[in-house]
Length: 159
Length: 282
Image (tube, rainbow over the protein chains, first blue to last red):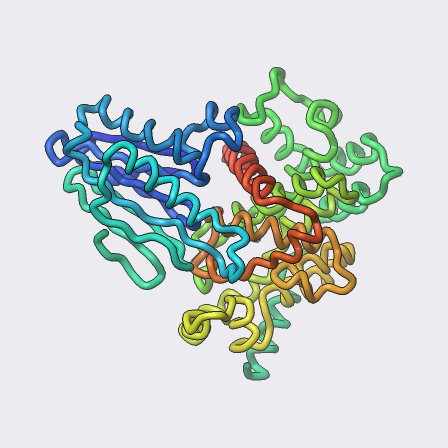
């Protein structure tokens, strides 16, 4: 298998049947996988912050850092490989948080809300998700089968 | 915690190689406001290994200098002594912090990456708040988790007990370490710092980085190391299975007058800078 590692604030799309797209150590960041079962095109985004308005300059240099610039780029990049929006299977993981009783630093929750908002506006449905909690997650998409595996300390399960 | 385990931990601390002399000398120079660029250059120039490594890093594409650097003097002039110090320190800790820490579920390379990210974040926070001792802030960040490499085996052996305690809720990973092992990776890290004769401010930051409220009087470098660590753990930079089980001390943020948006900006900047440093080392 050809493993493509997607770093924080990065994304990858592929139509290589031998490729696995993987991203490690999702904390408050969110991993989004998309997959077209007909075109056999897959994509994975690992974004870290909700809105590009925090730093338009950074969003320009690395759009995958933010939800509102990364998600459109992920979808557009997959379309370029022949994927179609209506066929895409979307799965989501991450948005965890540290022990924070007072909710001072709730980026995970804000990331997830930003994602829901952009999906709602664009009529995108989430097929499955595993978000929140105090858990670090690894996410892997098999481009050929569309299978998405979610790994935590507890083990590995299909998402 | 048995006496044999305590002995083993003490032995491990003694066996840990010290930081190279060049790092120690640079640390002293940078905490002394009277030292000059020339002093820094003189320390590095006579260490051929560091000089070679430094020139290699400076000439890597990711550092983005337009011309080839051929001497330490050139490097210091173009990058500044502070940046040189950071690169030397990052290089010197790479082997020690680079191995996997299976007890914590930290893969190879990840603890070094996390440590460099925290170092960059503390330094940025210290600079943005116009705090003094920016060089110490960087070192505190770089070494804050040094205790994990000592406690790794003990944590691995008792991971089930620690995890159970953590999962019951309300207990942080650090508190669980204390409860099951008798001490935390922060306390053990501070012991390492003392043995290495690091400046007191750095030892303090290592000791209290998860519990800044216990540091009396409160201390800016301690608070900022805590906050920087939280930012990097939260984002998921190089963390292990323990990453999300630490507690955020909101009072430290208030004491330093830091807003959430500042932390997010620092997080974004650090990710960009970290990628360039990682490339330089490859």
